[in-house]
Length: 428
Image (cartoon, helix red, strand yellow):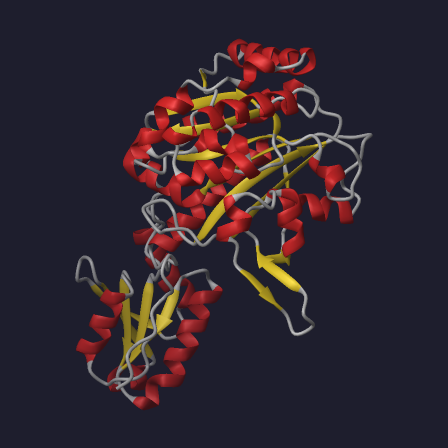
């Protein structure tokens, strides 16, 4: 016997009944975005690999190490999407949704793919919900979107969360800070890990994101980007902080919050929870004022975020706020006791479904015990069976599997059967 084929490492099946809850967690998060005026866009699972190297940055871990890429039969290089912002912007530009004269709010959801080391809250196929605001934005749009995620945290009772906030500067002031940071890092390179040495050369701001314990003392003492902001960026950051304070949204300044993507400018933020362990971030994002133009669109600002659905699931599970399972997935199981009763059983199944009664048929075995076992597996509330006597008299026996009560109905008393089942499953 051949050995079974299993899911690839880092890929998780979501099976019933968790699949229902998972989709419900996503839907409830999407409903909060809908309150903020976001309209959903459906994005492809793969794009040209050049889209991500151009937007995310060729020297980032995502592009260098984590993207799943493949060449098609024509030789073109594609990548499974590792994040959603670049795909959404590509679509917004292609379909003329990005417009300097108006603000558009777009959302997306679905699986993303990164070749990372699997652990709790981090998979190689994971699901994200994201929202992006494009157009002539002010710092108030930054605050408004963060406030929407704050609403999500409250609605889902996210435990022990903190909002981390930073400003990455703009193209006018960041180059000067970059030079100062590189000079500092080179002075302390003997105290930094090999990864930090590489990042110092190709992407020095990413050094600040290093989690290696031996690097922390040096990085905590590194120059802070907020001390080198130009007047424009300083005013932007001040307005964001003032807006959050006016809405009584608590935040913590984090001078090392740079995120893992090259396109961020100005505001960056993360919602973290210590209930998640090492993978503490459950929603994050920021401003990306030059990205739309970099991808061939108009020169307009953008501000967005993404939330990890698996992480939202874990946090809601800890908080006890996972969606409640619906009434039983199957209300009625229909079983013919003999082959001649199968047409009547099939008809009963269809009529019950027409009356919105979730119904399955078990047509294979002539043993009533098998029907009971199948009904139990389906978590069915009722079992209907048709045997020789019932077929002769034009009746069907319907048994309440909870109480043991059994009632005989006419084979065509479909409405009466449905009403009695509904009374039990959906009590008023």
